[in-house]
Each structure stands twice: as structure tokens, then as C-alpha cells.
Image (cartoon, rainbow, N blue to C red; front, side, top):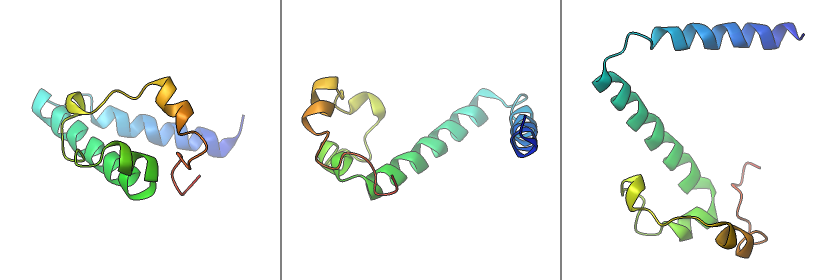
Length: 85
């Protein structure tokens, strides 16, 4: 097994263990912040999601349109992936 992989795994385990004692409000705040960062990343780099969620970028997830396989396939060749890929 790769030693770098093991070191990274051990570091990740240590980070997760720090979260074991979190209260519900701490966990919810962490989830909200993580989701916010993910959405910022995607909206900055994906023309597809910029169009698909136009005007909805600050809406809760449950208010976003459902992304179906049919929609994915219709837009597959229209640079759906982020610029980093």
C-alpha cells in the first residue's frame, strides 16, 4: 500500500474524530458552510450550472430544480463539466 495514501488517510481520520463530539447546531453550521463553498465553486466554474440554477444560486437545495438524466444527456456536449476538468 502507498505510504502517502496511508498518511493522508490517517490525517483524515484525525480530522473526522474532531467532529465526533459536535452538537447538532455545530454540525448543521459546518454542513451549511461546506455546501456554500461547494456551490460557489460550481457556479464559478460550470456554465451548465450557471444556466441551470440562474436566479436560484442562493435558494435552499429543496427549491432547486431536479436534475434528471435526460437533462444531463441533452447538455452533455455543451461543456457541462467545470473548467477544472
